[in-house]
Amino acid sequence: MNRARWVAMTCGLAVCLLVTSSVSAQRGGGGGGGRGGGGGGVPFTSRTRLFVLTEAFTLGKDQKQQVKDVMDAAFKTAAPIRAELSKTRASLAATVIAGKSGGDLDDATKAYGAAASTMTGLEMKTLAAILNLVKAEQRTAGARTAFFLMRGAFAGEKKWDEVPEGRTY
Amino acid sequence: MIVRIVLALFLATPVLLAQGEDGPSAAFGRPRTLFEQFSETLKLDKAQVPVVQQILTTAGSDAPPLAQELMTLRERIMNAELTNRPDAAKVALDSYSIAAAKMAAIEASAFAKVYQALKPNQQPKATEAFGLLGGIFMPGVPSASRGAPPAGGGDR
Image (cartoon, rainbow over all chains, first blue to last red):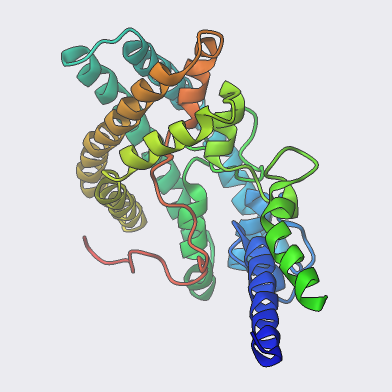
């Protein structure tokens, strides 16, 4: 192999390395870290839901508090739904572990599906309330992020304003 | 020499990415994936990880149409709420309940196979781990998630 091919291969590998590093740095965060403003230097690990919502909608101070109030209230409302989700999920697991199938499995999945639907209803109702709080241009800018961020927002036991770890229901 | 250094760096990249202060996923500060949480909860050994991955991959191959249906229904529910149409919301929620049950059945089927692959000392954690499989076949947040609402606010 001549020198020119070695140089070409070296450059290719270097590009691969840079691309891999770049992709990894953006993974999971939508690559938003490079945006100007408050989010630019914030590591992904500290991007809580409220932080992301604030960034996505470019919320003012009062709006941020209003969104927080809406989310806090929804999280409290979600308590019995969380319990039902947890109960029906455990029941489904027990059904599987016991080796049951047919009607028992159908009943367990239906019960879980009903709980999941109730939680989804609350999430979407809450999202609609937030979308009604913000101005039209803010809605356009942030609705898509908020839509995906809302899934599982109230499924955690402790709080909603945490860094999403992918766990939903 | 330069070639060797670059090649070594390139080959080491996945290793560097896989290492972190808080387990294999904390490099670059990213949250743990659902599979990583699942694997850590069950304390899967090196031989079990690819087996379980294969089980979940195979099970997940049936999930995309259902996942899409669930996301579409979420849009319909959101639009119904936005436009204050409780009847439309109820219809969509009923459909969501059915679709969510089907997704749970896929998750349960995968879980049954994973459970069979567990050692006795791992099985007591299985119920907890099953909780982590919830939504594992749903799409993650798109990389370009800023922008207009997914549904466009239409009457669907």
